[in-house]
Image (cartoon, rainbow, N blue to C red; front, side, top):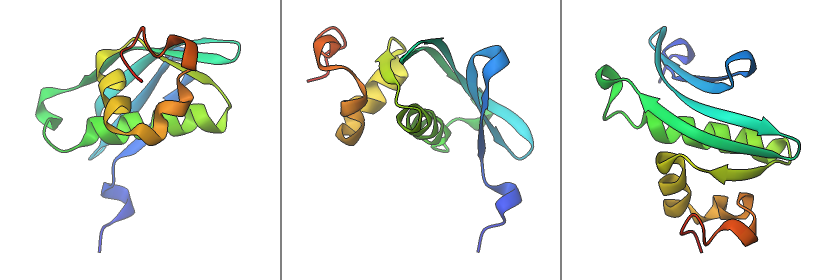
Length: 107
């Protein structure tokens, strides 16, 4: 059984235009974004070295993309990590508009 307090938490910190993931009460990483009407562009993702190898990047990507889906936003994955994650999880490809998928090598 896992303790909810120890589970990683993802927050949308809109004033800093980023999603943050916290683990063990510490900032483990973040995904920066630019928000425009009807779309979100992910620009950069970081997982701090001390938190590497725990799958936190994937949890961060999934939570951020799920939030975009709930808000009905098109996703522009300028960030290589987010783009690669979408490429490995085709059930998220529908978030990227068809007319820009070639630009991101997502088809």
